[in-house]
Length: 240
Length: 240
DNA sequence: TATTTTAACCTGTATATACAAGTTAGTCAA
DNA sequence: TTGACTAACTTGTATATACAGGTTAAAATA
Image (cartoon, rainbow over all chains, first blue to last red; front, side, top):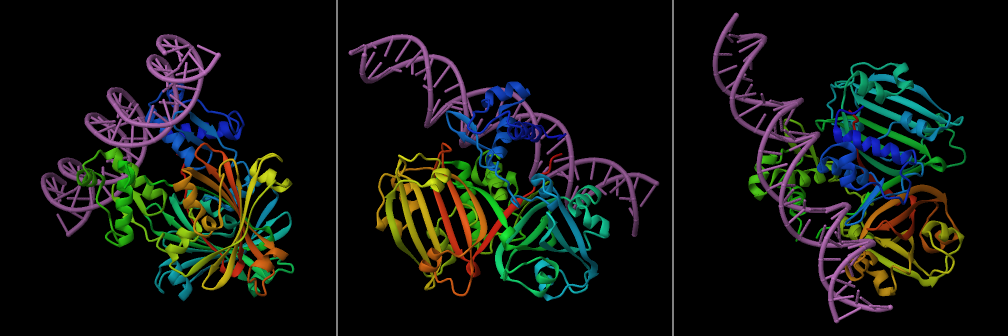
């Protein structure tokens, strides 16, 4: 479990929402009631509720209470910072990862720019194909700074690199910036993916940062366009 | 200005980051220093800093301080909940909105599902083309529940509907769910947009909710795929 | 009966205090 | 000189209190 009180309350409430104990449209107990249930202070409850609100699970209404949203219940592909393994598990579809390339290399100009490294530094290059229901849908090209990831194996890449990085290497992945756009198919796409008749792929560029704001991974994820879907949740800030 | 202390501090710090007074990589003053500068409590400062952190402007590092990220400085198209007008202003490109349709209608099956309305209710339908640098890039189809928006005019639609809704009608837009996917061009796309040789468009479905979690707008935004770009910022939650 | 007022809730903001825990730089001892 | 320790910072969490202001339903009033 979590050692943090407010995080464990967040998780507890979240699982109650996901299990349907708190149903969409329903009011969850008031802050004061939760204070009694969890035997804690109101500020701690509020931290948990604010997390739920930011992530789109509840809506807080002043003077009334918090109601459960059903916005999130739709399958949400890449939203947030979820690894392919976590995603595949959520969707419950049969999937497989095929490691096509795994090597240490020196960065070219493009990578020097994207990973903020010098020509002397070593870079891990991992090329993987994601197969869903038997079709080669996604081509993932990952580049890690070897300074942060000294060792990698085909086995690790087939399972989950993130799990290895976080659990084994104790790297704290903190945030990521993603860019989406559509690009013409390359020969590489046609070689590794079942692109069918399509002339374009959806490209997701991912810059992943550690806790201390150092960039340690650059990923280019190329999706067959008919299989791509992305869901986003956003709150509007009101200044006034 | 903001009446909220922590929001006005957030805005003040944000403008200092955007103006370059606080530069990327730089440490901003510590929480205790900010407490003195703004003559407030530490919790209030922390609220402002947490907002900056969630929105990707700073990274807080325990024991060290907060450093300014340069992740956000790239142009960010549709991230967050920004209207086309706000976006066009940010990018500084010459743009124009052309209202192609504006009418009150009854919902068809698709809209009844998307807007959660009955056959008897009235719906505003607004079809607009967004022109950027002389090219017709985006086709926006907006549907508003007339219950929330009793009046609309061509003039309002040409300027900014959001400005009208928030300033005039005092509607509080709270959050939105977005879905992205790629779809084949329809005849409507070819009629209104300069689709060139492309066979597909990027579709953004947008569900917009008010403060009390009631769905009041459904938008379908169809983008020429070579001009589509989306940037996202995400933080990873660590449980434990 | 119809309307207003009030009391009891709700969430939002601001403040103060305490301690835990990570970082850093200087000090002291081996 | 080297290493361990300490003191002074930093942010993170938990608690308590106070009051603004929105909501609701019951009670009081016209």
